[in-house]
Length: 109
Image (cartoon, rainbow, N blue to C red; front, side, top):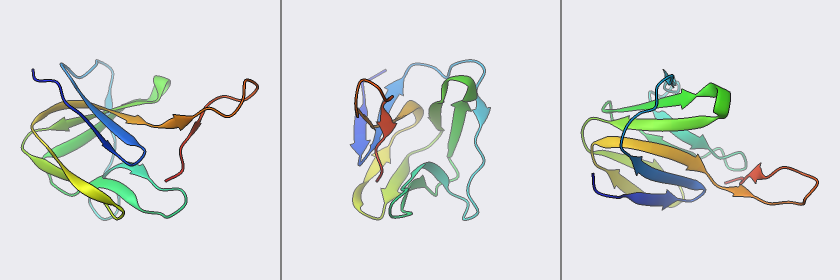
């Protein structure tokens, strides 16, 4: 497996060797897209329209994984498109440190 890391705004995608056990599929949105993250400020989405992508989650630990069976394109209204090859990826959201008294929070895109 060749290493792969890509960032699109506040979303980081890292190729991983396998899908963890215990994941469950995340439904596509009403437009039929796999949405990795939805911008809280703009409403824009980091999304994949291709049918060859499935998003999974480990709900108890708030982790998401993406399974790609054929090359797909990740798009966002304000960022350049990213082509993803077949494989398994962990999807991470960027967080920001606020203070020692508050937990890190997700970056608003």
